[in-house]
Length: 316
Image (tube, rainbow, N blue to C red; front, side, top):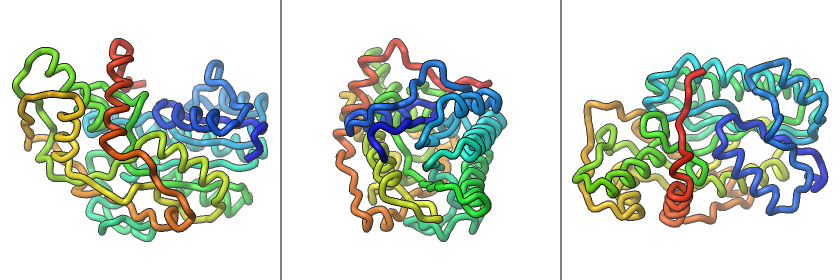
C-alpha cells in the first residue's frame, strides 16, 4: 500500500479496527480516514455519501456487531441483520467508488460445528453450523460469498480472511455479551476485589479454542493487504488451541484470583473445537509474535486502566 493513500477501516465493534489503525500508524501510513464523523455502516445512504466524499483507496472491512454465546442467544436477529447490512453497503460502495483493494474479515464460526480439525477452507459449507451462533455465522459466511461474487462479476480486488477468536485491548468486557476471555477477565477481577470464593464459567470447560491477539491479527491484515490477491479465503490463526478450562486457568493466574472455577454444564458449550489450518499464511511468511500469557496480561492491564468505561453490546 502507498503510505499516503487514503485508508478506511470499516469497523462497528472497535477491537480489531483499533488494532489495525494502531498498526498502520506504527508502519507510517499517514492518511487514515478519521473515525469521528464516519458513517453508520448499517445505513446505506450514509455509507454511500462517505465513500463518495472520502474516496478511500484501501478498505479494511472488519464488520458489524459481534458477541459471545449469550449475545448470540439474546440478539440473533440484530447480529444477523447488522452484519448483512454492513457487508452489502460497504462492499457495494467500494465497488462503485473504485476502491483499489478491500480486505474482508469473516469469523471462524463460519465453519461447520463438527468440522475436522484443523479447519481448512475446503471444509466450508460441508455441514451444519453451530446452532448457538448460526444467524451471525450465516451473515459472515454470506460476506465471503458476496466478496467472491463481486470479484467474479465486477473484477474488484477483494481478498477475504477468517481469523481465530480474537481478544486484546479494547475488547468487550461485558459479562453477559462478551466473548469468553473478556467475560472471564472481568468476572475474575471483580471476584478478586469482592473476595468471592468461586467464579462461574459457562459450559463444561472441554471445548477447544484457538485465540489470536488483536495486534497479531492486525499485522496479519496488513500483510494480506500487501501480499495476497487470491480468490480463496485465508485462515489467520496461530496453530495452537486450548480448552476453555486451560484458558480460564491462565486468566486466573494473570488476574491473581485465588478462588475456584465453577463450570456450569447447564450452559451451552458451542462448537467442540475451532482450530484453523493457517498453512497458506505461514507459507507466505507470516507468523504471530505475542505469546498467549503475555497477550492476556496486556489485555488485563488495559481492562484495569479503562474499567469505568467498559461496556457491552447493545441491541439496535
